[in-house]
Length: 368
Image (cartoon, rainbow, N blue to C red; front, side):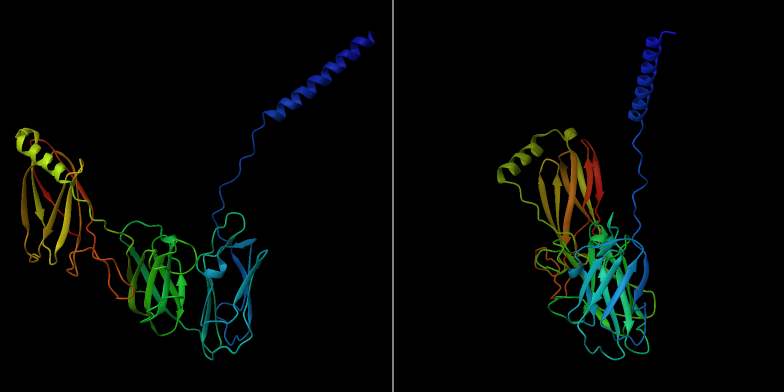
């Protein structure tokens, strides 16, 4: 037997086996991860227990089923009534809360709200409206207040804060109770005493846990009472602004007027606006896609009246109708004011329509 040939063949097959092994490793697919974890952490235990009676301690804790993290915990944490020296720390799966040793109020329900500040470590899925509730007395307050937020324009409800503040408060610095709406804009405050509150909803744009009325959109409802029923208070959120369209230059308007006077009728369309009943003055603007702008002031009509405004021959193309209802009669769009307890002037829902050449269009308008 030729040992040199045998040795060469063994080397060949060894090399081939190593090559196939390397190729097999190279073509293996990267293991695919499972679906993204969207489940918030689960509470395993907490002290004091939810609704515990005759508790007068100065520390508390919540243990979750997974590691947690805190986001803006200091600004999100609110104690009602106030607890002096309130602090919170996160370590592993535990949220620890302490406050100065002090004499708590007798026969009083206490609550510490954390908002959505606590979430799991990996994905930061927040535990919604986390809170601790106990009583120093023989019972826990059992009333509630349900809130439904209705925005003027679309908004992610999870970005909003809803505060209950003491009624007739001029300067809003901190809430008595705080929560975040659900995806449907619903908030339920539980364990409330018999009382009435002013409700404030706002978007915390700078994430500092406070309301800046000069720069953060808001809404409110004043004098909402806690109760045992499930009726929801509807709170408007004034998150829309009206900017009066800029008037056209004289030269531009003259050119449009010339075009309307000289163009053949078959190249234009006749436009008539159908004005619905209104019990307050409406300021409105009709804007052509070219920028050609026409403004209107509709005086108050009786509720049974419907009016027609014949605008004659107009440019074909797309038109946008916008405006506001001047509820306070100052001839300006007025924003909402918490301090004066006034809503903003209602903004008309923007409407668009198209006028085609050689058409005779009667366009109904909506004043809602």
